[in-house]
Length: 279
Image 1 (tube, rainbow, N blue to C red):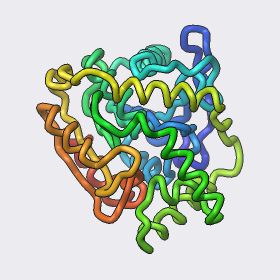
Image 2: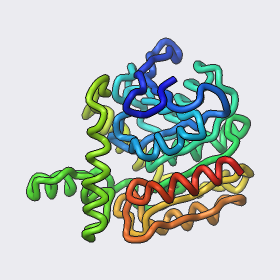
Image 3: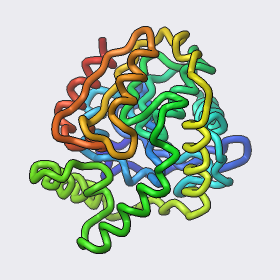
């Protein structure tokens, strides 16, 4: 197994006859942590600083769910179907229990897994995400369009404004994050298709229109909820709502940061996450 994110080989496993792409980093043994990523993201969009930080102590598994990146099939337009795909992936890999981390859209998927299959989840980290019924996700289409237009006008990557604060420190953190993403030059993942983005946007809109997430009150697993203090994609207040709904949750809000607060403050996040996961 690879020691670093840069060296990790992209592999595939058949999930109900569909190839799912994934990478593993860190020790070959021990309880793994499964990572579920944000809208439009593929394997290459995970911050190497976070992956390699986790991998110093934990086996880390990243996956492209159905229709995403190098995985086959068609992306479903519901969070629940995405959760079913993640559960099927774990079964295909022979994993009965994992720690779970979901970021943004992936955090919504992780919430459903924790409710539907509590036997699979030991501990859970939910970053930059919201419970069903909270406002924010339905506007992602417009937010993405605005960010891409701003990026073109300013000659910057959209994640400069989507994930990071406009302060000098935030923009410096954005540049450093994007440089880390470019460190991997070989065996790069396939970018998401427009069809996949459309399905993910539809799933997010349904999530916002969903009913009150009463099932979260039955999730007795330890959960760490994290976010930046000024998230423009999933309003930071949603992290407070999420933590209140979960009976065994802690909350960490990072200063002068946005949706990508875990990447801006990656050293602090990795340290807090490992302390939580190893408790």
